[in-house]
Amino acid sequence: MAARCVWSTVSGVWCLASSLSRGVFQKINKVPLICAGSVQCRGIRQVVEKTDGKTTTIEGISVGASQWPQPPNPEGRCPICRWNLKHKYSYEDVLLLGQFIRSDGGMLPRRVTGLCTEEHNKIAICVKMAHRAGLLPDHRPVLPEGHVPKPKPQLNRYLTRWSVRSVKPILRKGLKWCKVRMPVGDPCLKNNVHYSLKPVYMKH
Amino acid sequence: MSSFSRSAQQWATFARSWYLIDARMQPPGKISTMCSIRLQGKHKPIYHALSDCGDHVVIMNTRHIAFSGNKWEQKVYSSHTGYPGGFKQVTAVQLHQKDPRAIIKLAVYGMLPRNLLRRTMMQRLHLFPDDDLPEDILKNLTEELPQPRRIPRKLSEYTQEERDAFPGIWVPPEDFRMK
Image (cartoon, rainbow over all chains, first blue to last red; front, side, top):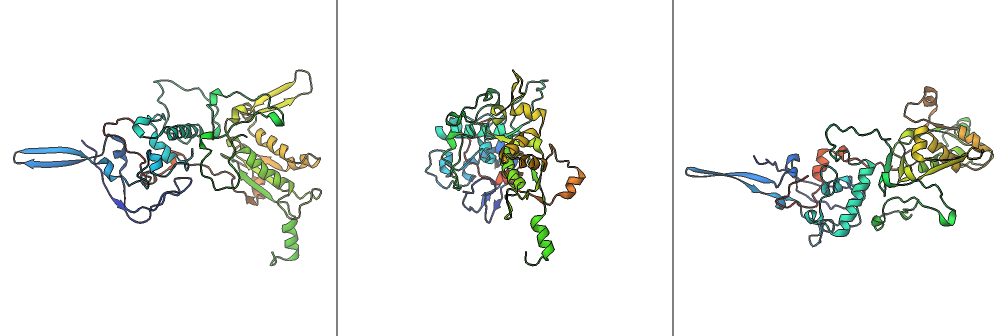
């Protein structure tokens, strides 16, 4: 039983400024609207029935790739470059990050997604920061049966560079010239586009 | 305002207002700077250090503040009781569990000028760990200040239409099976 897909075109202006923190997407008409179930399966196939006399052939023809909208920069080597998103995403853009993760929150391998090394690392770091910020509540790891997790203090955090269990408290902060800083964010995102006059500073 | 009567304009200039700030998912440092400015009265053109022109500030949801980075584990609040062996160091997590209002209170205290008026200004700061405020304070509130940090949306908060409208960046290969 192949997945049935209902195609419809959305005419008019399609703006994504709300979903990305910086609205980079150009206005594209005629976006195919894909139903929820079809994205999850192996490949999107359409059922075609052919009758030759006494023989009826029912086959599923994969439709997949040709129906996606064209990226603005088709010469790019990795998906991020093809969509002109190189320095434009952050840990908050969960709609983008959610395309590269498994259902238990782990990253998909680079040979499958086709990302280049630096972008894969950046996306992995952003995914970790999004997990720690609690922005991906449905992508939790599967706990073994009957395992009740210990009650942990529910603390809100964002732009966490290090894992929560691995960090030690700074007992001696040091004098002004040798202060022990608390890092925020990650240096791999230092080249991100920002439109403010103040630089983004990562050593709090 | 030129349309006000003299007495109304006098009252509007010199009255002590009550501001409300919601600290949910906000960094305590930014909340505290906003607070300290209003407690001193520096947001008013009639400011003078001696003229006691500060306003009241009410902060709610202090239990739900958000630190950036790993500050919950790294930030240490130190104090000394005065007795030998009385040096106590407490991480932000432990302090927050003991008293959910202490982090913001200490931050605002450190941002106010170091003079005798500091204690009076701290008395005008009202902190509440959750959003249930007593009625007499609710009656006094005049303005709610906008939150300093934009809260990002969780993936579960996006509607299915928004998720479908977002284009797929990469195409999975034919035989790929895992999600």
